[in-house]
Length: 621
Ligand code: ADP
Ligand code: MG
Image 1 (cartoon, rainbow, N blue to C red):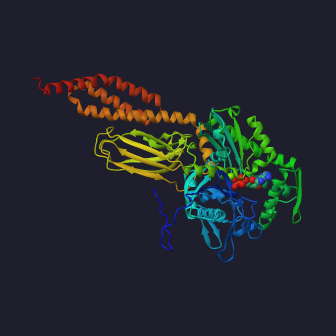
Image 2 (image 1 turned 90 degrees about the horizontal axis):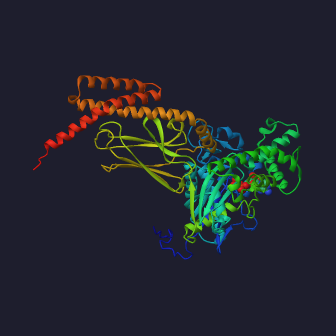
Image 3 (image 1 turned 90 degrees about the vertical axis):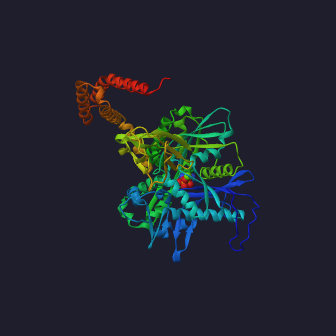
């Protein structure tokens, strides 16, 4: 689709001289930045002083509605905590319920409402959505690159953690729109990082890469395979509640401890909490290059050695390695199968973390590129690919949870399995279970359990106007189309009549990564009992089908059956009907067998008769 730029003031058609530019944006929890391809090289856009590319993801609401973003806003964390918003990415696509446990983490006000509706943030008497707040950060980045390049920029690729679900991706897209950016693609951060390292052109043979991304608020591990210029994400794992912020908290707790203070002592003094946060971060960064740190906040002694820090974070680091282990398992790989380990995120500057990750994978890690910038640089490369400038790279992502529909008896029928490559398209045929059924409800679920009641419902719709047909005759094709951003389109079509219906799934609010991990764990834990339940439900479904055809058979072929045959068939169907009520799948199968064995010669006889009748009706000459 061609777009014609019209200058709204003059009404004239703008000359399109420079060609399209698409920028790459890393919209981070802690820091955000924008990059573009300058003379063929991905380049992060720096501030006017040329020193810093990172824009702290902090928004301050000042007097008379003046909004500032970035370093200026960050400075207000201490002086004006109630009007200073940070870590808003943690709230993207989340409901109040999703975040109630972590509310204490924020120095600002999340409106306190115990519902499933999306979270809002209160500043004085205005409410802001995380989308609006993220849009402020994006506007700042847009302004920054526009003044650096002296031209308007309207197209972007934005990165998100690999675990972001539909709602969170959609929220990110909406934030872009609100900031005046046409978001051409949402890309997973680890995918972008691997692009930045340009590992795609390194080798003829397939390479396996682990991307370890520890930022301020999130941890992501992704296992990628790269071959012939194609990136494929084999598996992902992680935790949105694991990051450098937590390390700062460990340090704060340690300082309170050595000063004989409790959390309650300072909790009411929001400025002090923030001052401690900033001091803890300073200490942490300092300890990445020196052995000890000494300072104070008020009368609090803020002293810590690298050795102590390493003790404080040992469990935390182990948690990230556990995630790595699970990601390897999902990819059916061993740590030794990994060819390259890429370090992403500011927190990977901590030497202890580098060496722990290196030891886990048994190899030296990649840390040449600036770990804060690498994602944005990759996003810029992705943008360049979309602009058509790099035709030989393809990107494939994967979906973290299975997608499917509810079938008879509440069973989950998976259509797109978890860890499928995205974009994905899959379809399957279904039919009706009742004669003359005109409507079919299609309920879409996400999750790994066998019963839909244990999975998460994404939406439902009704395929209406199926022409009257006997049960089992309509051919209803259900198609799942999952696009590159992870947004699902579900289509249902009755093939004989061409009746069609579709929905796009945009879940009302997101599933937190903890919930997602929980769903996976539960599915493993319950695999055995789920299997038993599934077997029972399947036996019941099959028995119900047989009961249906048996009833039909008795009705249609009464005249070819003897009294005794009729009575026995009825008796056996009654027995099966009772068995279906019970919980014993073996018994159901047994009675089903019995009924089948008894009725199949009768069915043959009925068939012979039908054929004979058909022959009789035919004129032979
Ligand atoms: P995000 O992707 O969450 O926006 P970044 O990749 O920008 O985060 O990483 C920010 C985190 O990195 C912060 O917690 C910050 O304190 C931490 N960080 C930055 N530099 C260092 C360093 N030298 N040593 C330890 N941690 C650091
Ligand atoms: Mg990041």
